[in-house]
Length: 230
Image (cartoon, rainbow, N blue to C red; front, side, top):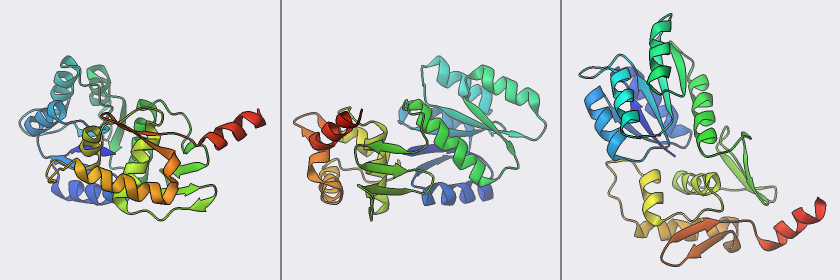
């Protein structure tokens, strides 16, 4: 999952980037409203953390311009304590949630997980596709009850496939959501990581749709067993 962090406070930005990265997110950072507006309109993100008090262009104006340009990425705004008018302005501009400074990092992570989950159409906090399970809260995955040992990129790849299971996802889309803007992106490397993840979860769980991309599904025998239990 790829996040845009818009925050001008250097110390807070550094702390959040460390926490987000440790929880399986790829993070791009914008220190002002001008860069934030550009990145939000030109790069695909799974969510945005947006401070409202920004240099150059304020956060509410950035958010309004995104929504005017049909940028539908879910946005969590950061506001000063007691600034209820900022919260109202943020929601009216198109925000999806807010958090008041100062805040606990765990609360921000929980709200972010909920935003990403809802935007992908999931209600449950954990993801499951047949015998495959993934818990974003603990950044852990298992198959048929056996824990999986995944590298950070393998985890991000599996997480994204599970968030959008059943849908064909192109290599380009995977690259855009697994790497930050400064990474030397090569869609051919995705095939390598798909192969690694297949070896760990079972080759019949990820289909290759020739010329289009990849699709995560449950094996036929697991679907048959699930149907038999109904």
